[in-house]
Every structure is written in structure tokens, then in C-alpha cells.
Length: 171
Image 1 (cartoon, helix red, strand yellow):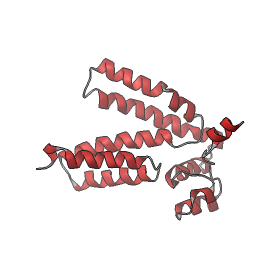
Image 2: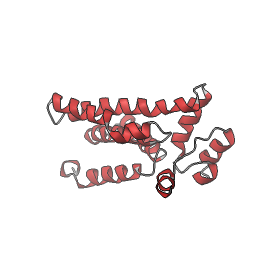
Image 3: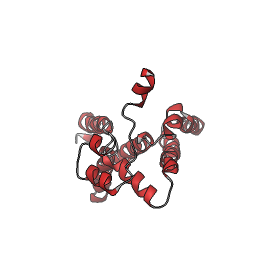
Image 4: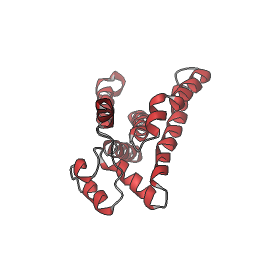
């Protein structure tokens, strides 16, 4: 019984009213509005549900994000390893028990992972040649990631450290 309570602690509840979503978007404590995740996940879930998708099927957001993540893992990994190894990495990402398990719940983890990888890709191309469009895309990734899950800030700090400590980026 206690293990279930601990496992269930922090499981976000999908806000289904405009008032709950407004509280989150206005910066209210997520606990007051029905969850503990920053508002981007709730806003996407709420919008999907109010476009006619049943609440139980809103979990497809996680499935779609997981599929996109798996494809991007293959693309990213193929830069460093043979394509067969990159395909294996993508397959393991798609079938990893964390995404399969949490994909059945209304949680932001798959979106967090996808936005984190997109952030890495955009940061790399922006570091190569910082254009206004790339900087805008990077800022959008940071905003979406920060509004998706607090753990994105670890990815952001890692990216900032990479930029700061990379000798090739110091010139």
C-alpha cells in the first residue's frame, strides 16, 4: 500500500477545466491547479482533449513524442556510429521500458526527452553559426523545455557548460 502511494506521488492530474489551465498559465502553484509539472504539458494535453480527443487517448502525445525521439536518436547517433548501431539505439529508445511504462500515463517525460534532444541539435548548429533564426529556435527550445519539466534545466546547464568550456567555441 505504501509503495503504491510513493509511486503515485506527484502523478499529474490532467486539468480539464479552463480555470485549472488558466491557473497554471498564470504561474500558480501547480499543486493548486491539479499537478506538479510546468504548464506546457498541461496546455498541450488540455488542447488535445478539447479538440475532441478522449482523455485516455491524450496519452498518444507521449507515443508520438517517443516515436519522434527514436527517429531523432537514429539521426543523431548516425553521426558518431555506424547506421546499424544508430538504428539499434533508436530501437532501444522506442522500446525502453521507461517510455513504454510512462507512455501509458499522462506524463511529460517523452516530451521532455524529445525537447532535450532537439535542444542539443539546435545548440550545435547555433554554435556553428549563430543566426537570428537559429537563436530564436534555440530560445524556443529553452522556453518549451523549461515549461515542460523542471529537469530540462539540467540539460540547459549542461549545454551552457559545453558552450563555455569548448575551446573551439571560445574564438
